[in-house]
Amino acid sequence: MRKIILSVIVGMVCLPFALAQQVPSREWQIKTTVMAVPQDYKDGAKVYGYDSDGNFTTLREGSNDYIALASDPKREKFSTAAYHKDLEPFMARGRELKAQGKEAQEIFDIREEEVKTGKLKMPDKATLCVFTGTVNPETKEIENPYVRYVFYIPFATGESTGLPTTPTPPGHAWLMNPGTHRAHIMITPPKN
Image (cartoon, rainbow, N blue to C red; front, side, top):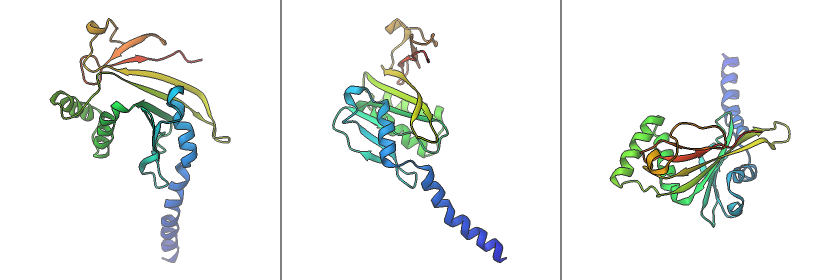
């Protein structure tokens, strides 16, 4: 019995320590998160990330038009994103719905309805950049960096833009989610 109690106590003590070890430092999160931000906006971008308990929080206040999101430490793959501040109501609503346990299609449908009714503000155009790479386990540097670009133009269609609505070869633009609040031009550069 003593052995079981000791195991439970050790497990309880180690759990918060293990979580704290999984969340990167504030400095590292800021450094790697702004890699998603276009060069002209890096210095003043607002940065969201995670505290030592894994809670979503503001890591750095911003002074320009960009907001950047740190890579989620609960996910295996490294991925950050940056977007124009006018997209924040849309993004914040998505985070809120996800926290409520909603699945991707449900989030899409709820935001679609809210944008159509005017409850959720969606800009007529805005940029998002997604930065991915591999974290070197020894140096903690990002290797194989890659950026793809998204230009939101709500309710645009293939006809209104002249763009194809199916994926195209790397480097070519195409329109994803045409005719919806989430219509956006995807540009996926070729990988080296």
